[in-house]
Image 1: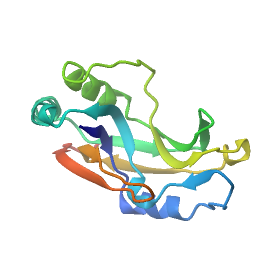
Image 2: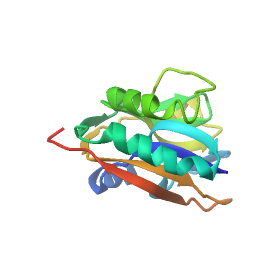
Image 3: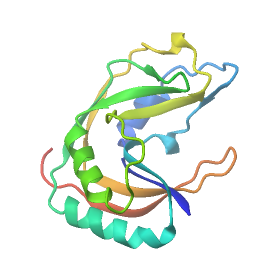
Length: 170
């Protein structure tokens, strides 16, 4: 079993912008590292490794010829359930819907929620005052990845199991 998700990654210039944000040391708050900065289109949860080839094929078929997507970051950070600090990302709704449709037969949705794209900046006991901090940027998502989270305690490690190019100007 592996914890999987489908995501897009921000480009280096957006990573640099996020790296410049003030990240104060606060009790109970764990700031995400740049290698963790991605936007999940669909968390898949714990998935049997035997399902991975079918997921690769389904995503490949559905995303073949899909257009690049214009993404907008911001305008400000927000608390997500009191346990995360996120930077909202706009523009990914249609792509996320395609990903959900391609994967739902293989990995059923057990907890339907409205799609909300965020780049997670911190986890833990996120205080209210961290929300509302300005953060803006934009980029064109030119690929989607099927990712396995193979992180250990204090050591983030995301492995791309497959990557799908998005075509066109976005």
